[in-house]
Length: 210
Image (cartoon, rainbow, N blue to C red; front, side, top):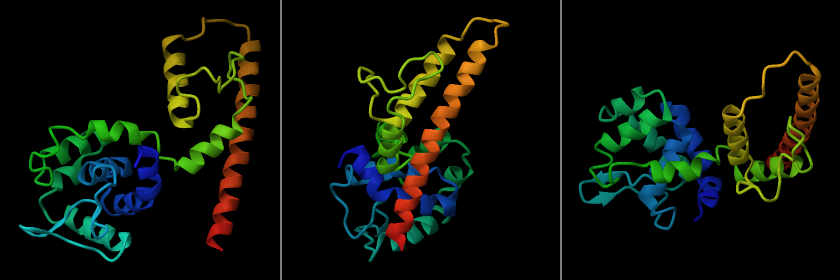
């Protein structure tokens, strides 16, 4: 699976385990991506390769059953350092240092975390927001989604790139409020587009659940 496909398939399960442990859902996805080679080897819905004995892995009837078992495993006393970590970076480090790794994570889960971090939104939500922002311009008047941008087509990564660029090149001090008013107008336009996209996603989700 690609990172987008993996996130689309298992983000809901990660969010369920996150609710029961406090561990960041993308940290969980990164661990499971390592354990399953990006979803190519998933036996009995056991995304984390939880063992039922020293020589066998558990099998679960559903991903929900796996989530319940995963929460219980994190609370079995061997993973207190993971539960006590308060940032994704600290949780990743604690997982690598925990018995779950048993040294087979190669010292880091970062190569699995980084490509998944963009998909805290589902791929479908990311695509909807991308579409909604076509034609929207940023506070400098540039298209928010220029096709030549290497992050084009991925809302989260593009937004991150925009923030970094803004931080690196702050506007000069000025008492002219015209740029501020223009920026507010641009933000309002972007927010209107975002609101429409979120409403569309909610409407579709409500229909799918009906």
